Image 1 (cartoon, rainbow, N blue to C red):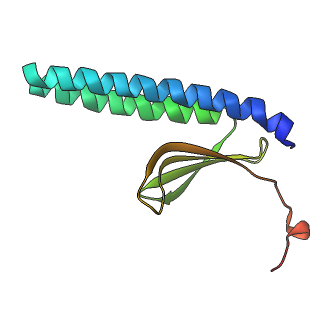
Image 2 (cartoon, rainbow, N blue to C red):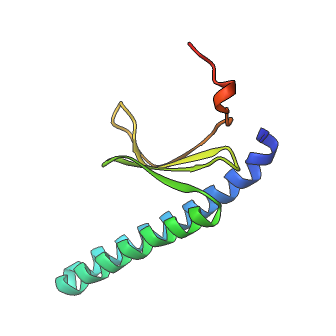
Length: 117
């Protein structure tokens, strides 16, 4: 898949993830405000919101045809061979900077086409 074909898909994924992450940030602000008044209610709201947020991200990526792969405790990886895209969620760079997500384009190489080093 060429870059011109992946671009619209990557743009749509970015918009979807940005909207979901914005909703999560807004919910965090609501939790902070609620904590001052009713901590048990805030804790319950936060737990439900976390489950909804994770489910929405999973649903969106599965809807785009991505498959989930575990990397480690720090990052999740979603791959779509069809679109030639990988989405890293909760990615921490080696220098300590934290990213909510990163989208990377790749080419699918078959076993017979593998490049040996």
